[in-house]
Amino acid sequence: MTNNWKKFVGVGATVALLFASAISITQPANAAPRLSDAKIAKAMDTPTSLTFWTWVSGIQQQVDLFQAKYPKIKVTVVNVSGHYTKLRTAAIAGSGLPDLAQIEFQFIPTYNQIGLLKDIAPYVSKKFTSQFPGWLVSQVSGSRKQIFAVPQDSGPMGMLYRADIFAKHNITIPTTWAEFAAAAKKLNDADPKVYMTNFVPNDAGWFNGLGWQAGARPFVNRGKNAIQIRLNDVNAVKVANYWANLVKAGTVSADPAWNNDWYAGFNSGRYATWLTAAWGPNFLAGAAKETSGKWRAAPLPQWKAGDNISGNWGGSTTAVMQASANPVAAAVFAEFINTDYASALKFASEPQFLFPATNAILADPAFINAKPAFFGGQQVNKLFGDFGNTVPKDFQWSPFQDVVYSEWSIVAKAIAGKTDVGVALNAYQAAVSKYAAAQGFTVRK
Image (tube, rainbow, N blue to C red; front, side):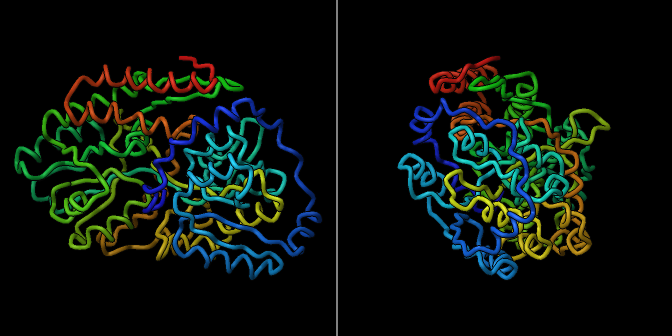
């Protein structure tokens, strides 16, 4: 997930129209055989123009590296305002789609369901799956060995904490969620102006990542247009009740995120921890410069002592559109910018500050041995890379994730407003199930 991902999430307005027109699309059969190296080489030596929609700042530097290797391929980068909405508008119109577009992991099933994404398995390198952590490969793969996108950045979750606040109040780094709750009470009792952390009521992705860690599996694909929906399963209830209890106790705040007051809270010491993703350290270093040197990183607390499990919050991919007239060149481009060493390493530096997805960077000494002063010289990249190895790979998204995230406000309001969370989760389950059924899905519990 990128630092500026928020402006692309509110995209539910046109989804129903697209599902209504595309619900009967038959998903591709087994992935086609890989194209021969000779045919791929010929395509890359043929004058070709590609259009790439993305929101990543400065990505022209990666494009330049690609074009230096493949001078016959011209790539035009377009930063489109209202990225997702315009993709859908172009799909409805049947024209105006780019060759490639940046797509967040959670929206790959959505765009695959409406037939927008090209299976690029025939065009990528033979070593494709070995270039990324297994759980990321599972996020872009189909059930019949299709590949619908190339991972670009990811967001395995960990805990950033104020070492000075912990030391002042003799707080031990919590390794379990029970310890986290106890530390929250101890801290708030000592200083009511300081909260252990902030429950985020306006970011479904954050809560989803914590549910992922806890074992919640809200969606399971059960075949063509059939889906299991369990937004109120036992693990979802566990996580929601946990945060509801902390909010009721007043030991964590429930401030809306992504605004000036929230940023100021990190600078002022209002929040002693931030449960965040791998892109969080760079984001925090920019948003809370006054606290440089005071932060450290640790794994997420665990539900069971001795476990070592993380969740994921965010991340994006480069996907080839089904409508592209040049899928070979487009697929090679998508793989190159995200796996070529020099190109992928640039994602981790200014102005992008992403957390690269490729193993080559995740194991690179220049990346993992970095010791930023903001975190007191701690190797935070290495830590979050290790957290990525503990993300379960069996998590599935729905093909209408924008609606799921929109309806999550039902639960968020209950937690922040200190009302019945069980009732809210049941209402959440009912709302999403009703929507899915209205779009022609067979809903199973």
